[in-house]
Image (cartoon, rainbow, N blue to C red; front, side, top):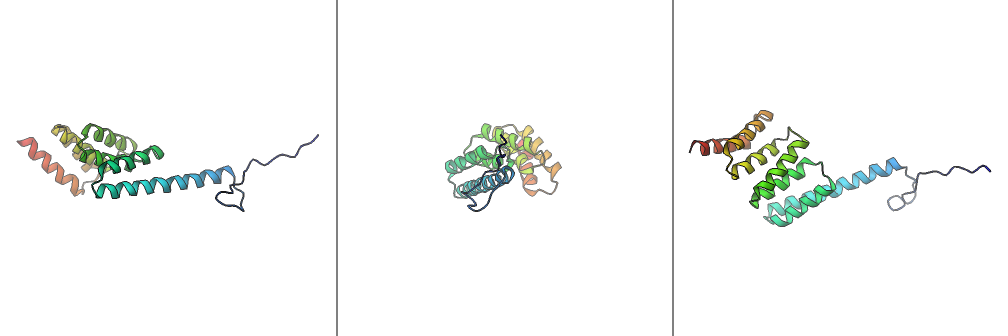
Length: 155
């Protein structure tokens, strides 16, 4: 006997009770909800960082990274927290991860150079500050830390 083909596009009644959604629409909506959740957690982490609640900020950025493992901003933000916590090796790892995602992200060069500086690797630190300036020659933050590292190297 001939059976009528069933549609494989389920209703997504939890979000839109009167609309049918195909898989692609559901995936896009899920992706948007995920982005919103990541952004919410990231903003919480930034606020915690500003209030010097570093352990909480670390937890927030780590949670966000689980949800968005290819987000360079999250790794860079967590690297900043780790630098403040004096966990320089871990900060270096996060800065390197951010750079592996986007080699033109200057803040990641700043984080990597800063972590190396605190590890006493001044020449290597300088190299990454210079690389960051090659990407963004007008970056005043990188210029300032490059001046500091040059003074340290001269001592």
